[in-house]
Amino acid sequence: MSAPAAGEVRLCVRCVLPSTFPGISFDARGLCSLCQDAPPAPEFEKIRGDLRRKLEAVFDANRGKAEYDVIVAFSGGKDSSYTLMALTRTYGLKCLAVTIDNGFIAEQAQKNLRAVTSSLGIDFLLFTPAPVFMHHLYKTSATTPVHTKAALTRASSICNSCINLINNHMVKLALEKSVPIIAGGYIGGQVPKDSVIMVMDLDVQARFRSEAIKRYLKHFGPDAEGYFGIGDTLVARSALRKINIVNPMLAFGVSEERIIEEISELGWRKTADTGSNSTNCLLNDLGIAVHYKQHRYNPYVNEIAEQVRTGLMSREDAIHKVQDIPDFARVERQARAIGLEWGDV
Image (cartoon, rainbow, N blue to C red):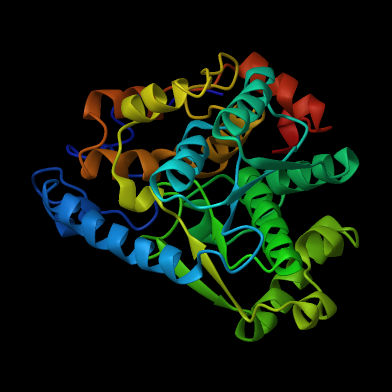
């Protein structure tokens, strides 16, 4: 794997989105079309303030309705750790932290899972899907078009498959426990901009789930039903008809440095073996490498560009992150771990 030749890829002069990013264009100044449409960075704080008030209204309306106020999809990474801390301490919500162990959680990240939940004094569940299925899911995702083009602008195919499995597990838990809110630790660029608060109407979503399941069954085999399906019986039995899906990090507006500083007080420590764009997953560099080979841009560039655009990251730091090409020897080791040969990508 090698970086593009000098001058082959053009970067936005403000946010570092590359010319290889789908649908992007540049004006005479070298400013990308997304930056042209974005408000000045100072205006984002007003936008975030409005979003925080809307979040608070959702929290207040659903507090105390179930054993837990919110289920938090907790990866042990910096953003989900900060989300969990804020919901617990700032908003006083009773949280259930839930982690999907994909078999590639870094050793330090595993320690962080325990340290953060212990420091916050909250309940914690760990679910480990069958490794055989997860390896098949990752290998297929790396070699077969599984996801939409829009989804691939926010994460690699490997990450998209994992995220969808995680999200589905959170919905099933919410239904089982009648928890009205699910929170993720996603930041701008990882999810659509209107994803701070989404209301999932379970009856309306049924037909969309059906189409998604067909796709997953096709690519991942019959076992996919258990990981990506919900089941009409569970929906019918649940007291919930709607679930609030929230992504609070879109409203918080905190820099990576501040996030790490605050969660470090909980005993969280940065990983040394997950690459520069992840703080929990050992498979992340493989996802980046596969995406780069297939699409010619770093799958994290959208979220990184959004952080620059909103004033939460310097352009210098952003360039370092998007141009940090994973070590190929490490990528090959990760590929072999899931039974993948690099030449099959």
